[in-house]
Length: 248
Ligand code: PEP
Image 1 (cartoon, rainbow, N blue to C red):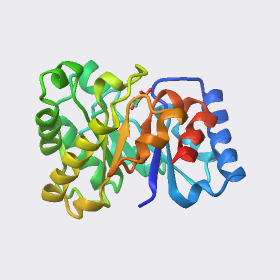
Image 2 (image 1 turned 45 degrees about the horizontal axis):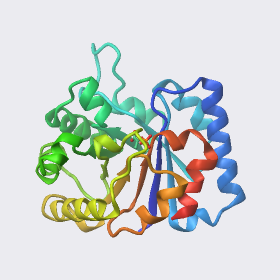
Image 3 (image 1 turned 180 degrees about the vertical axis):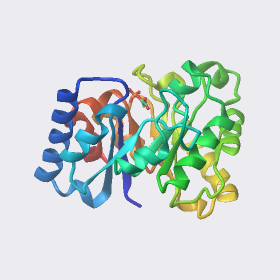
């Protein structure tokens, strides 16, 4: 399967930055269309920048939200609904990122509700899972990730509707990367869980995330069952973002 190269721009940059970054990503792919043979591309700008960024993208680059509401519409101040993301022509939405779990106390149950809203609107839900450093030190990483998966998978989870992003919390934005053995063990474990709990679980994409850079992407992408990357910091420079795809 093609790798999904997904950029999570988080809460960074101005509108001008976002437009320039989108233009640079599109131009970089146009200059090197071979990248499209093995990769699909996705960018997830801040919600306010979705509509203008959309105007800069071509069909080579999908658009995604960074979160959505667990509710469909109404009096939920500050929320962005899955229907609104769909209306902005998003194809994907990131859910349960560790920053949302940590800073907004998001539970697996809430993430499942959000994922079900996303699926109702035809969005693919990128469900993030990952253990903390302490949980890994205690040898509980599979237990934690297994529970996150089972409790947050929506009804209707299938290769067409979900993507899983394995992001060890201690590797996000820190420059620390899991070893290829650790990535292989966790991706194999997630694959086994998906085979039992999702339709076409052998075909659900499993992304790795956590300090992925052009310099380490090749060895990460060589690991079995790594079907792409969710990229934070390095997605803010088109050169690095596309360099990761090139490495694969
Ligand atoms: C992320 O936030 O999903 C992420 C993986 O960030 P970074 O690439 O900066 O570690």
